[in-house]
Image (cartoon, rainbow, N blue to C red; front, side, top):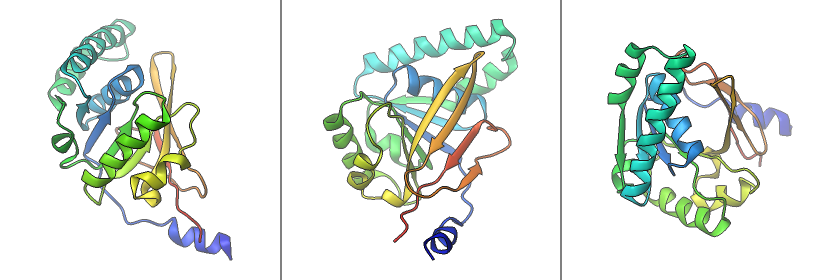
Amino acid sequence: MLQQNAVRRLNPPFMQIKNITIIGTGNLGTRIGLQAAISGYQVIFYDITDAALEKAKSVIDKVIGQLIKAGTLTNEQKQAALPRISYTTDLKIALADCDLISESVTEELSIKEKVWKQIGDLAPTKTIFTTNTSYLLPSQLATISGRPEKFCAFHYFIRQIQLLIRCIALLCYYQFSLSNSFPNLLFLFQYYCH
């Protein structure tokens, strides 16, 4: 019975993802956002200071240079990706039309709780919530967001300068790809089975 209920819940309506908001512009968030922009998505980077956003811009320039040097990115792809990226310190602007959030703030529970409370209050109802947490339990954050049914963990691994991204759900799993242009991004959606 539980399995049948889970399968029923794991058949969400199709959602076109166009706009991705990156919350936290450290190494993880910056690289995830860059890969999304290269893959054709509109990306807004959000952080609490202009200095953090300037650092993210420098990291992006450096990583793009590495990708071009490695032959995994062309100048044409670079020129197409950069206009898809914007930066803001205003959370309302960052969340205004986002389809998917990738949160990569400091690994401190109290900070993540505060961030997810704000995100839950401001994000559109369509938004998929993801956290990039190394050791905190995503279930600790899902309830605080106010939308545990749209919440999952989001991890990536660098292998030969390619980004491999996986989402790990907490209870029940559903796999789908965002689009053919972002083939390494797979989601395993969390749906509570009750």
